[in-house]
Length: 332
Image (cartoon, helix red, strand yellow):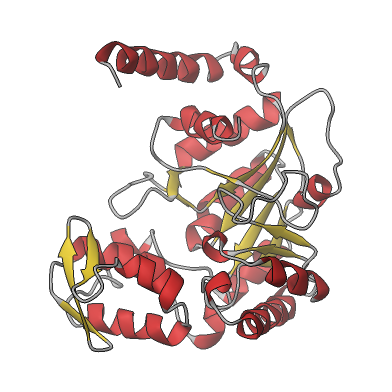
């Protein structure tokens, strides 16, 4: 991008932030049209991007929710799926993936302050006594070590900010997501890293991976404004698993969550947005009627598809309100 264009872009972002955060915020809101499902992950104290960009700061999250509630229509995911939109405003549904403890501690109070509906999508890892998602473990461990790894007979070395197989040349993420998507392989990856790095007792790091326990999930489900949905059982890339294995995982997740929240789980957000058309149909037959992809569809589905909806991710890559505007812009 030419220097002049970069300067103009920066000035525009600063102007957006200032105007949207002032009494003139309605000017920005009037430029927004359409209906959007937002995808958050974590809400931490500072929104640090040391390990990844998935955690908004509390300050930014509050600004975003305040803006949405003042100038837009924020509706439940159920109403969004049923098309119950305000015709005079842009409509938003708010979702959270992964079930972090910081959702309970930081996001839940803000949502309740603003009477803002949201859906929290949660895995079944508590039931197998696993307290960290594989992606968070790899993100954090990769940041904290440069050691050579041996995983299931394969050698991995760090190049830049990622580990790559010395046999296939593929990144560890690509292998986990697409080739070895089963949970047992993830345990082998964690074991290999654990020989070189220990971070799970570091309180500053813990904010970026710790999950809600069963009691906190149940308490969250009793909130007037928050519903619980499934995010798979192991956080596996379900589209990369054998079909029946993926179906069984969704059924297991649904059963586990229903035992905690005492109502039917009908919402599903696919981990890493990974699914197949066949799985969408089977999930629906299992009672998961509202299904969500991640930042994009995988099979050229229409935006009007009633079986699965696309979301727009919020990431800590810009100033507070511009994080929101960037997500909306990707939909344009």
